[in-house]
Image (cartoon, one colour):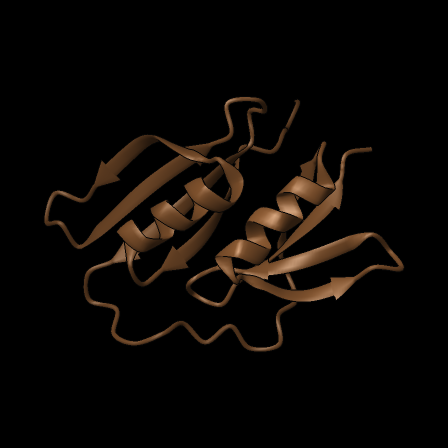
Length: 122
């Protein structure tokens, strides 16, 4: 039996806003979508066109208010071949929320408050 990573999910409050953010900040494009028959939820699957890993954004019609992220420090991480250009983009977007120059990494915050780590390509 073999297992492998397929995707990770984040629940979002405004699907269009999140789609724009992930495309601008990380170059992710929507590759497929599932809409519930009763339209109570939409699943938008995003990909980077380079790896098989996917990001599933879930929008729930009846969800009111922001998600409570609590103390959970789970996060996504993106690698970049050009840390300076990537940092400049995120700085321009105003989404950098934490930097650790000693480790050579930083984090951005998405529209729903999720932190995403940016690391240099290994």
